[in-house]
Image 1 (spheres, rainbow, N blue to C red):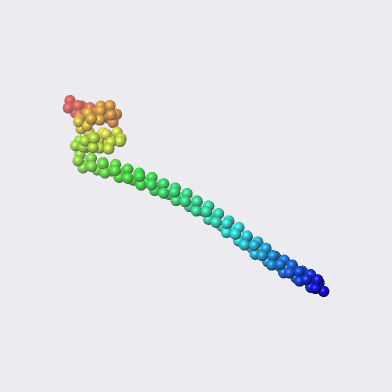
Image 2 (image 1 turned 45 degrees about the vertical axis):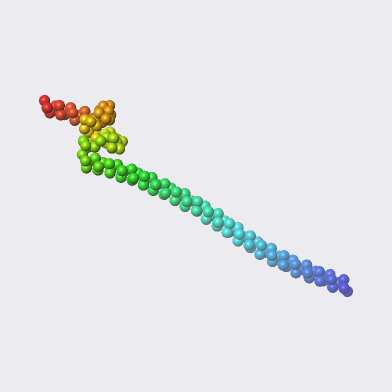
Length: 138
């Protein structure tokens, strides 16, 4: 009789443990599914963040380029305003930030022509004014 009671008790314990094990397995499966969903959401969020960072960098680079261009244009405008204010013939070529033939031709006077060189002066059409003056004098 004692053996039979131990056997029944063991079977009850086995069923109880199987029930606990089944419940733990269900909880584990549910938690694994939740973890998989959270991991998927995290990966999607990281991908969106990377896209936004890429877009941010493109906007940042465009703004940086625009600001650089604006600074350069402002410097050129200020230089041209200075030349206009003091007169093209009075501006020293060394003081000017001459980049284009138009800016060189605005430097104008005979002294500046010698400083920038005859070849550059002719390249910008500097002798045209002298030719016109000679024709008017005749």
